[in-house]
Length: 235
Image (cartoon, rainbow, N blue to C red; front, top):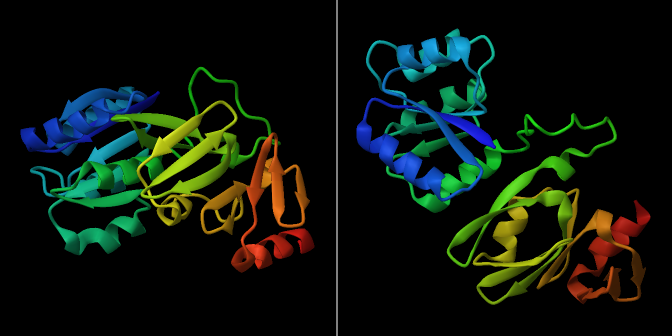
């Protein structure tokens, strides 16, 4: 569960952010704060995984608030002021959302923020556990958003304006271009082997000619992507 805090002096901003978060089953609102001092007092006694932070607030500005936190959680800035973006990234924020922002843009920011946020009830990963195995992303399918462990994705298949994501557990159809989907995944863990296919390198079992085998699945290698596979075999 991702515990989050909204800090904004506008009631409507709280409603929009909470409405978006309510579409994501693993997001839990901890508190609505209407100024930074209220949030500062709350964080003295409580912890959260993620803050949605407005910048232009009374009493204490957003970035001033971040500077006084000893150990700030992950932060997504939500503001109408584009000119402060550089300063935000210098403070190591996750993303910078300009109001008004769409749900698609919001979801992209949240996906960045959960790379990964460990569950408080889960055992501590051992040193051999890959960060990629813990990373999760949200995929939109059939008017709902499913959280997927990236390490469980075996391969991706383009299907027109959609992509089929094959995991160890299921197949998820999402409205996305394969290039956009791959841009949100690590290039060291996923390899495009055909204009319509990309594979998770760790799940490859065998490569035979122009075919890659993952479990019972056979994935073709396109001639324009053969070099990608040859580079993998030489690495």
